[in-house]
Amino acid sequence: MSIYFNGRPDGLGNRIEELIHLESYCIKNNVKAFYYWNNELWRKYPILIKCVNVEINTKKHNENIDHSKIIFFEKTQEDMLEASKNISYINDLSNDINDLSNDINDFIAIHIRATDKLNNRGKDEFTKDILIKNIENVINIINKNESKNIFICSDDIKIKNYVISKLNNKKIVDPLCDIIKNEIYKDFFTLTFAKSIYMCPKFSSYSAVACLIGNGKIYSFFDKKETSLYRYKCNIEYLE
View 1 (cartoon, helix red, strand yellow):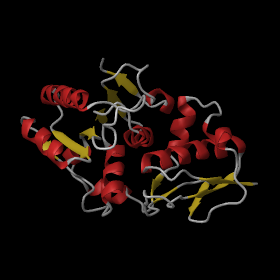
View 2 (cartoon, helix red, strand yellow; view 1 turned 180 degrees about the vertical axis):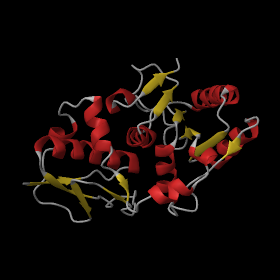
View 3 (cartoon, one colour; view 1 turned 135 degrees about the horizontal axis):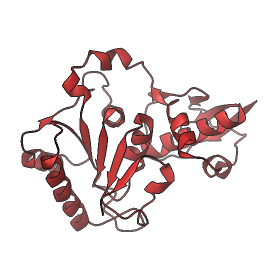
View 4 (cartoon, one colour; view 1 turned 60 degrees about the horizontal axis):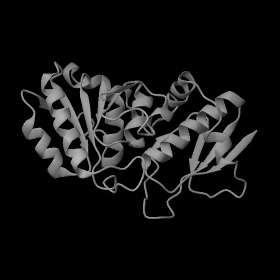
């Protein structure tokens, strides 16, 4: 049996979130799925990921399973982690990762999503003042952290450079820069290899699903009731 799912025309994190839920549904129900990769609107991404039970394509399906049936059926953290293991980069990265030196294999990440989250229009958006406060908090935390290698993922180069200038005795790393050429996928899969992710925005599916796929840990500067991060069932620590 196969099912058909027309994906959202949203950001990469939202699409991968759908794929994780779809993989979980396939595992539970012993079915295969076809996922329509929706590039109809302004967010367009090449298909550089693959799944075990889901075939990703650019053909919109006439038969479309009810999204709520996939997204909202009950799942445990174990279910989400099991499904997340089935999502990977389109090419095998294992040999490339094994070739990296040990110190690069041991890094923590800072995720700074600034531009489209600074709208203060809903539960998961927030203000620039709060972003600046979180950035200062993460700088203080990282400077006290024993980890030497830091990866910074940001949509704002000025903020990224500011953070770099404030980190003491740290090495800024970008371990997949010569392996994955597409910037958004390179940053995403680098987050999956991070030991932990410090998330400066109130919420981002991009780093949340990266944490799931990598089975790492994500730190949030907000109370768990303030964001939608809880729904991902990843390993979360709230730094209130």
